[in-house]
Image (cartoon, rainbow, N blue to C red; front, side, top):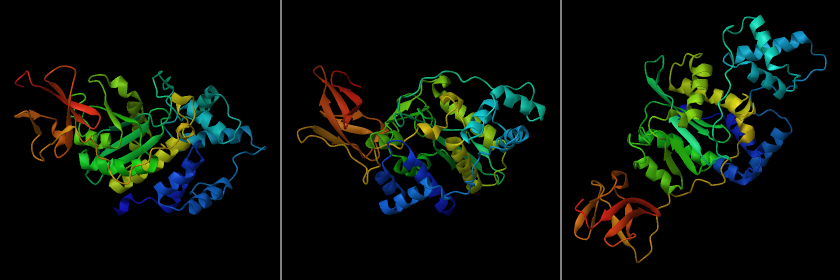
Length: 374
């Protein structure tokens, strides 16, 4: 759809940033962005020479004649541009753009002196959390919760972040939370950033059925891609703390400050903030670094054709009906998860007589016990 098209400048900027990350595969990125290697290296060379590829000014930020008043002005400018940022983030951002940044307490005093903050407010310390040791080992995916646009429609922001780096893989302005919508938004992201090893979600639709570890069509699709879908434990929201914290930032820095008239404008606002979040906004949970400094695209590319499980010629296999979740074995019908309708499964003996496992590829999805009637 036309409203989803990114500008040429945005695509070039995203390509160059990903290509400059450590261990990036430029050839693979060129294929994912649909360009030749020659074009990719032209963009990258221009980027490395400082030639403009984005709408931001490339002028130097450092001036040896900068005065204390100029520094205060810089603090206030950053605060005005990002009203939800606290003193620590502003101090780190000043450092990142090449200024002799004051301490966070000094920045806080400047903000307080100029009436930019509530005197009762203060930055909260980030709680220590477990994180994966490298990018793309685990992504976290969730809907933020619906928000009403000024046109009257409801928007359901779909967010995807990398567990290790906190890099925002995607923020998608969806009009519903249906399977086809999620898959339609997720596939281009997987084609651009590669395949993670696992994706962590809650137990709600479309990735769950309300019960942990239940099979859904989305989970089966991800399994074919070699991506494990991990469901959170019920009533343990702390397991999704990174998602929850990301959603609070999205609300505080975008949703609470913008009047979004429609889906296209919402997507544009999300894209702009994602760029800030990934490349400019210091993140307290990773030592005030920016997420892009810790992220690399996955080396596992999206396949040209969706893989199907392969079975040995001597194995017992059954095809599941397209309408009912049953297979026939030993003269009886046995129930299998409905998400596997129209799929081909293997039946393999387990560790005792009469007990069989039902497998989709190498993954066991059900059991058959001939000694029971269920």
